[in-house]
Image (tube, rainbow, N blue to C red; front, side, top):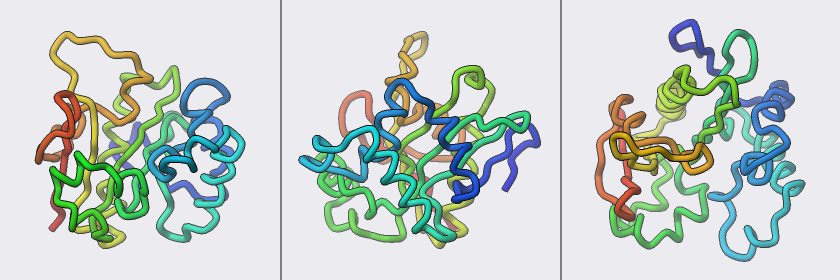
Length: 200
């Protein structure tokens, strides 16, 4: 799966695990969470550790088969970024999110055909190079190939001229989702839109 020839995006498979380790790194939120925040809720999240989260993602990769839990971006042959994309029903935290249920309808939260993009990680040195854009476009393509009817995202709405730390933007930005053809269907809070792209 490729994008514009500058950034290449591939599913995270067991053979690419070392590349994921390079992207998540050893410091900061990615190295602590390993994209388990949305998969674990309540006490399960509070009891998780850096090591258990890393082991959980690796197990998800090993168990996934064709439906990898996310995609890796490569720039210049180097692992540059990550996006988590999977059926929304697999993210237990989203299933318990009351504000999200109000926006999309509680009866739809278990719809296996709706996929969610929950997390982006872009390595230092590769930011502002279109990596997140390439990852989101590839995530839509990947979900569609797995039979998704729609893809949702829960990014941050950043006002013009507003500065946000990268640690606040792991959900992505609203502008990135708009550029990828997503439409806002509601908000769970003033700065947190729910973005959706319906697939043919």
